[in-house]
Amino acid sequence: MTVFYFTSTGNCLAVAKCIGGTLISIPQVVDYSDLHFKDDAIGIVFPIYGFKTPKMVGRFLDTVKITDVGVSVSFGEKCEGCFACTHLCPQNAIHLKGQRSGKRWRNPDVSLSEIIQSNNRRQTERQA
Ligand SMILES: Cc1cc2nc3c(=O)[nH]c(=O)nc-3n(C[C@H](O)[C@H](O)[C@H](O)COP(=O)(O)O)c2cc1C
Image (cartoon, rainbow, N blue to C red):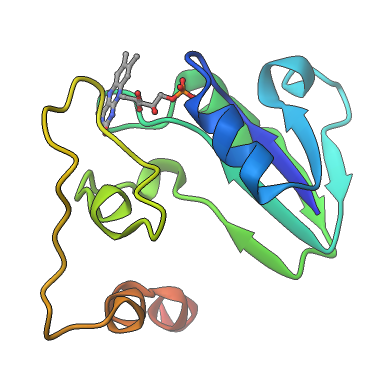
């Protein structure tokens, strides 16, 4: 597994370390002329800046080529700023900068997998 990460204050590096595998810092590879990686699983960990992907991460996602990937998860420009990541992280590891409360909410009548399924657009993207 390869995990690409971008961090300024260390949170995303800490998350990448928890995930494990080969860790690659995006700033250290983003200017490679051949940005081509191959692995059975690839992860990308980065903070949200102003409800968006950091510029350097956007540039990386625009140019990187990944092949033979079994599983790929990235938000890219698709982040809605809905805070589901903060509320639903099983380890409560995702926090807003300066937030005053670590309290989290999920409707008790709805499971985490139901929310994931409700927001999984993979099938509709294929049909579009
Ligand atoms: C310039 C800037 C803008 C940010 N904007 C957001 C935001 O829109 N939404 C959010 O949830 N967190 C925002 N944050 C908080 C970071 O995403 C958060 O602190 C993250 O854990 C930092 O990761 P790092 O420690 O790996 O750098 C922002 C942080 C910075 C520095």
